[in-house]
Length: 455
Ligand code: UD1
Ligand code: CA
Image (cartoon, rainbow, N blue to C red; front, side, top):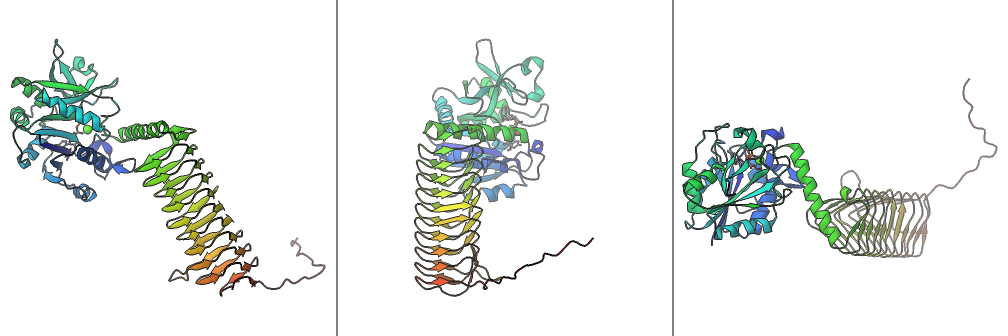
């Protein structure tokens, strides 16, 4: 049976108080509407349509990678009106399935949506409901004495008795195309908001003697996002889900509530994560690695048994097996560390490769450099890679020893086994096995009198 999915995204989102369209606000670094579009495509639909408003160029641009069809709703006449705009663009059999998703309901699980669709085997219209202790703001599901769904009453139209109902509408609905068409023909805008409510399709279906089923789901799945507080609540639910799935797969976390995860993050079993860590995909972390508190790691691959001490910042990097980083290391894009590399405190690396077992332990800048194996870079070494116009490379061989407080003025090369004395400014090639030393000779002035403070 063909599946058509309509995603409603034309609402104004005034309750967000934002110049950004509501559905472009983000949960875990991804816009609400993209969460919903991804869920839609996970159902392998035949056709996805997004209903958007006239000011939604931002939304179209953000979602330009998806092959959805865009349907303009020039005036926001309500959710029912929005679906009416989309129906003429659905070229499918009368009995094909239509699933309606709201772009501001981003956390639905695929299994839940599959199950809702399966309800159409026995029902004409299936909606997803949930039970909330605080149902305020949601449409309430009204049932008859024999527990059949009778209709949905919106908050603004509800009396005090109906407001007590804790079973609410998630907004998600599945129906056959013909049923939806018929129901939408029956609804009007005679209500508190003078809008055509999609939710009135339920009463319309009853009127047409159709069977309506409400399938309930976990409250945390179907939370809508209308305000900043609800956006924060959705983020919390999403994060909780990701953390639990990592914990289940064998990752340990000292304080899971403070670990934040975005995008595609694959972590093997027996990785341990300290408090206040941010992990932003695409990211892979292999077994035995430890990440201590307050580290932020994005778009990187970290091999096994590496220790990342507190306050490290790692971005677009490849970190080899058994490395030791930080505390306070800043590993910038295009850094590649081989196995057993040590990067200590207040060291910044960028676009650099560091060979097996080499160490840069203190206060250094390694930019546009290639360092061999078993080399030691002393404290305060700076790759002077930028001449004010262009960047240049520093090449350092294997088994090199660079004394502290050295400036390597690129382009420059230091060959295998060379030694650079502390405090040197290196501007020319240092040949293999040689010592380079560029500092001025020390002068001693005996009995030096320090200046005295003026009275
Ligand atoms: C809606 C439901 C309510 C449900 C709640 C769940 C209706 C009438 N009410 O209320 O029963 O409990 O969602 O979250 O459906 N939109 C359009 N065009 C419009 C109006 C809205 O595309 O003219 C889109 C919005 O962008 C949004 C979605 O439809 O993505 C829902 O609209 P919203 O105004 O947020 O409805 P709620 O008041 O939350
Ligand atoms: Ca909403």
